[in-house]
Length: 321
Image (cartoon, rainbow, N blue to C red; front, side):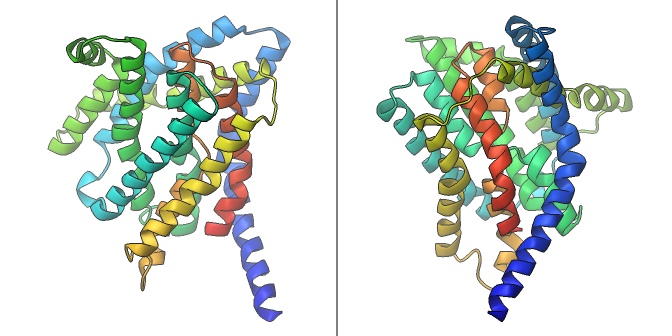
């Protein structure tokens, strides 16, 4: 009984820590999505307007944000073995989720890619990272930082390449490559990697430019999401339930299993590597929805998965914290 009481007390204490971060900075950040929802319901902003706003975020602001994120990340300090295991689990979950969407739920290839993408691309930058900073301090969040960086370079770019390939049908690899080279997001990722690896010092005015404009990517994209949500009928159908559960439970459970078998939680490994588990348990990032709007892909289930995982992940993060 005493052990149970201590566990309940510890869980409540961690939940309060998570809720403290929820009220600041997470809720103020997501308030702009609520503003988009109100604007959509009031008829001030239409779905067509939301698509234009989202296109501006995805083709102008987000490439700048991703460049700034990657170019300033301490890539030389990343725990490479743990990051590699995390990426391998992402690949396995993505493959299983894509097969489920494509062949069990009969969704088209592009939507299947984004449903699977929602299962592995976590809102770590705006959600899990602030919680980790509160719990562990700003100098001890390298695992989450490494996941954010690798997801921006590999996972996000991989989804873009897959959508580009699907959108071009039977196009030759050279045609797909040339299309990718002209894609602003891929350009931002490539230049970010180049500057990050070479540690090339950016001039002061350029630093100010990328910081000022990059910071606008998230609120603009979230506002567009709010507008679309105002026109979306919420329904707990099989697709929404299945991919919400994969994101919140299957992904973290598989990552935990792999880390245990790899000995990454032995000794002081839990204290060092538990942030990878937290990174996997966070909510689906809004970028899956933004990519759907950008490429004119069905987005109703994707938008709902983003919302439901954002709400339900509070409990899972409190358990892991």
